[in-house]
Length: 392
Ligand code: GLA
Image 1 (cartoon, rainbow, N blue to C red):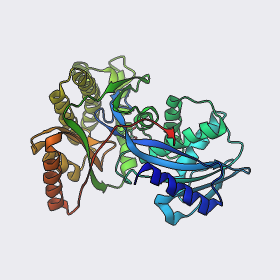
Image 2 (cartoon, rainbow, N blue to C red; image 1 turned 135 degrees about the vertical axis):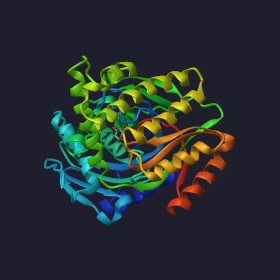
Image 3 (tube, rainbow, N blue to C red; image 1 turned 180 degrees about the vertical axis):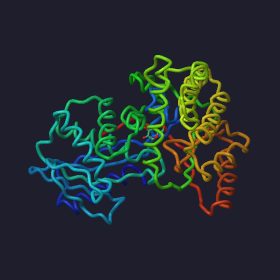
């Protein structure tokens, strides 16, 4: 569906549900794909994501009372979900609306209380559960809309921080800031080299020559994703504490590989040592990968992507057999520069760098092997890198 069609669909739905479309505005915030730097963002390390041209759209208008009426075309069955901007509480029944509500709640904690309610119709074109940050795009979108409609003063970096804060404290997922930052700070044809220790960042032009970024959706999402995610995070926190008894560091991202090797015996448990090793090595790989891209060394960039996958599979243990097969098959295809799992893990998508002339063969071979093994048709997207949130 084109953007014009999406806009038309949102306005039609808005009119149907809420009477008319006078003064309604339509907004967009993107999802993201991470090229390298996985599970480093809550370890004070670096990440290298970019915003996609798919994401979440909303048609929104302020009300005169305190009512909040939210409707998603993706979750039609839930119907219009009604609540009150002065009583924002997370609940199981609230489903997806916990994300926008969490952001409104986080704004109010910062002294930005909505003085009236809102009607909003949403539609997202990120495949659900694919690990391309549909929730972060919804958080950033909500923040962007609040800023526009209520005149709140917040920067785009703050939109990312508020989104992360609400996801941590309202929705109970201890995520880092990468997804929200990639969505709120996205820039067309650029990846964002972000240091999560201090939020300093640089845009890196994605000069990929005759190659493209291909995202492959495994269409599997294993359960317990959030709890496993939180578990990895606490394993890293514990390992950091143990390391801090022997070296002066603020995060695992402060260590080089050599420093880690020299001090790793301070970590009492094998599993925690593997987790910390991933965080340290992955951060260093990210620094090298960004350098490689600057120097036009795409083959090196791809090799680092592959090493990232191995580390996420073996040391961090956030992959799964479906994703491992997609990656292993990708590696076999001539013209694949690099391929790895992307995002939080336990299913979702892989990201591959593929030469133009090999994209057809890549989709055919990887798709066939995947379907043969798991009976699932993977989806392939040759992605475009887009800008951050905007008003249509
Ligand atoms: C999820 C989280 C991010 C990040 C990635 C792993 O997407 O939301 O903060 O930790 O996993 O890199």
